[in-house]
Amino acid sequence: MAFIPHTEADVAAMLAAIGAAGIENLFDEIPPDLRVKSLAGVPPELNEMEIGRLMTERARTDGAPLSFIGAGAYEHHIPAAVWAITTRGEFYSAYTPYQAEASQGTLQLIYEFQTMIARLTGMEVANASMYDGASATAEAALMAVRANRKSKSARILVPSTLHPHYRRVALTTAANQGLKFEDLPYCTAEGITPAASLARYDGQDITALVIQQPNFFGRLEDVDALTDWAHARGALVIAVVNPTALALLKPPGQWGSRGADIAVGEGQPLGVPLCSGGPYFGFMTTRMEHVRQMPGRIVGRTLDVAGHPGFTLTLQAREQHIRRAKATSNICTNQGLLVTAATIYMSLMGAQGLARTAAAAHARTRELVAGLTRVPGVHLAFSGSYFHEAVLQLDRPVAPVLKSLSNRGILGGLDLSGYFPELGNALLVCATETKTSADIDRYRACLSEVIQAARAA
Amino acid sequence: MSTVPADLKYTSSHEWLRTLPDGTVEVGITDHAQDALGDLVFVEVPEAGRAVKVGEPCAVVESVKAASDVYAPLAGEVIAGNPKLKDEPETINTDPYGEGWLMRLRPAPGALTGAAFMSAADYRKLLEAEGG
Image (cartoon, rainbow over all chains, first blue to last red; front, top):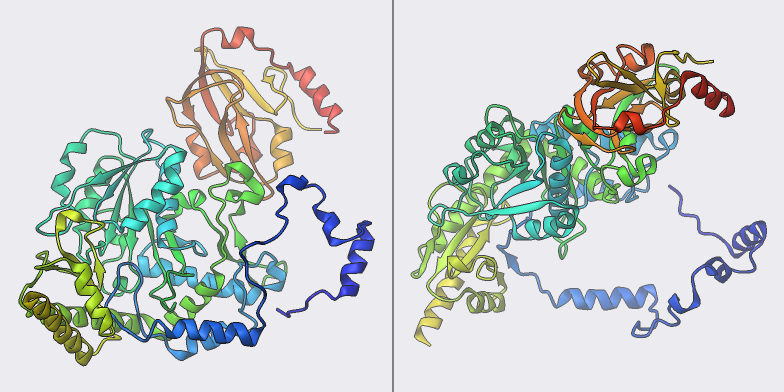
């Protein structure tokens, strides 16, 4: 798409055509007392050279730390081709195209994205993306209430092992729309949600059960038992999954005897760099029987009048420009560029490449856990299998330890004490394929040093 | 000119009503409504057991052109939604007054006597006034 700004003559011609004296007159409808008179507190403009220098200087203060933080966003190797192709002019837009006749390439790319995500999750249909994993989870809860018409309660069971940010976003998005989120306790020895602990809900009207796999602690939940429990009680299952892990783990479409009903997740691990929390993108898949309750846009493959295959937005009667207030959601897609990167990433990696990435991340995390738990005063919090994250317990408060590590150029993980105070001095750590044995050994040596120094003090 | 059977009652929002021998009421959309919507691709009917108020949106008909709500023409309880429409929504196009019925309602006490539905003649006049 060409970048063509309006010239002064263009603007004057447009204003003349509608009979307005100036741009300001276009805002006449806004009462004067609602207009902001000046932008106090906003510094004067900088030119490109100046802003480039300022940002470079600020970025430099971050240093180049060795990061062992996961907790929802993961550092993976991104082949150089991914962003070289993504930022080509033909792709460089945040939006899903409306005009099929002018946008076949972008539409085909989104169609391929949907196909890949549907196959990765083992589900029947994917949409063109969501904002991020947290908002996708919130939208999945709203969708479950629409789709589960036999349930009247709008009660959604949410394990405490779900990412705490996802829970908060879901509450913010959906609690005022009548949804009731109920926290499920987890087993503090194993760090998972045992299906047996759900017995107290037997005989009650439950709309949906959320299951995150791997869960926030990196642990693997017994997804088959949880899924079957929910389905036996008329509840839908919302899977919250990590796309890298899906290259190795059983996809949500195969959980239990019937599979999950909706699967969502954070797409960032698929070719999107860590970037202060975003922009990232979310994905959502479901079964065909629920497709009309799915939010977001969907690209379909069709035939044109001459019988040639082509791509177009489809099932639009769910959407706000047709259904207005009764639309399934007001979400469109402004994560198109990130979806483009993810599609190219998945194409380059292939199923085998993604599986090798997942296996390497898992192996590195095992190595990390083995190394760090050799340090006196550090042990693994939960027994049982994990993917590429694990919770460690320290013999002292985590925050000062992390600060000392940070002074040594290491981001040691996420302090869980604010989120899960019952776990004591708990630290969530992560290693992906980007970490070498030398990196892990450096972390182990620094942690040992920091803890010894703290003991001596 | 679309078909308007003489033995049915009608609403201004293009629903028809048929009182069945057991006192329940069958509801659908008129021939004019299906023709205006075009080929139907999806129909959502209400669950049995649901209580509806007059004018409450209780079904959705989606065509290649638009998606529209269908309003409950009277208060009552839904006895059944037409299960055939799930897989064959086009039945409404081919047989709007028969196999293409949308739902059956058990009228709330007094729901039928108080309401002023249109006769076939009045509905035909409405269509003429609307240019149909």
